[in-house]
Image (cartoon, rainbow, N blue to C red; front, side, top):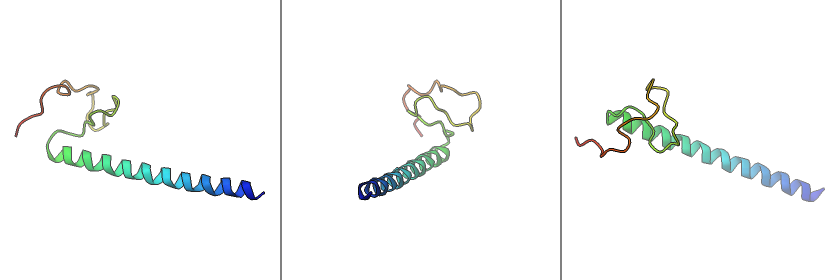
Length: 72
């Protein structure tokens, strides 16, 4: 029975770690979107595997994606 409890404990720890990781990723994504918003580029997440934010309707693949970045 003891071994089972060890497994349970490990599973709980792993789940907690995964949650923290997901939260950190979400926070980083939000910060990136915030910065992009302030830079005036909307919040199109580059390199997100084709997923585009819902805020910009109708832009599945921005034509600007592979061009040189805008100069201020």
